[in-house]
Image (cartoon, rainbow, N blue to C red):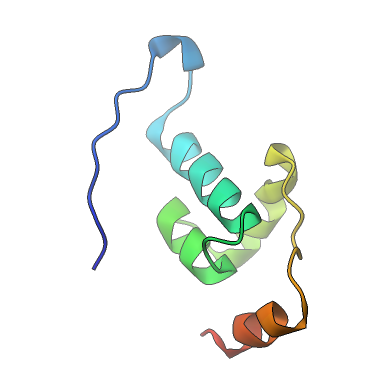
Length: 76
């Protein structure tokens, strides 16, 4: 189980919760902090939908070496 946080976002961002979670998940995936599957879970979308949205945030779909690829392929 993970931590639950509350975040107050300025109205000037004009971003709803779903978009904010997608951006957070994309960047955590891009930084190598989350696998594709875990990032998709956080964003509340399928892996495919996450992959389709990564470009919006400047995050490459495949950004890891051979070991990371092995781990990604093992994940359900």
